[in-house]
Image 1: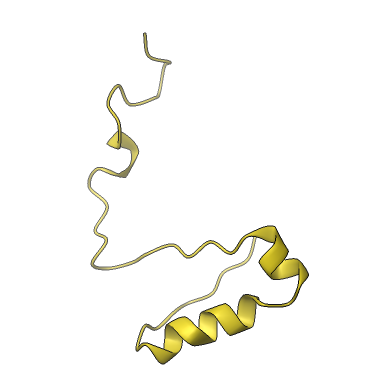
Image 2: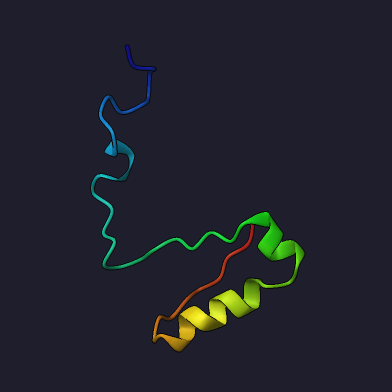
Length: 56
């Protein structure tokens, strides 16, 4: 049984996402609480990945 509006197969939510164009980076709450978010994103940027940070 599936819930209305939910995909009936595993991974169905991300079908059609062009992961070559974008990726989501999630920092755990303890990362933000300890002030490490900028360091994490700096390490990713040092590998040549560009980012556009958002906020919630």
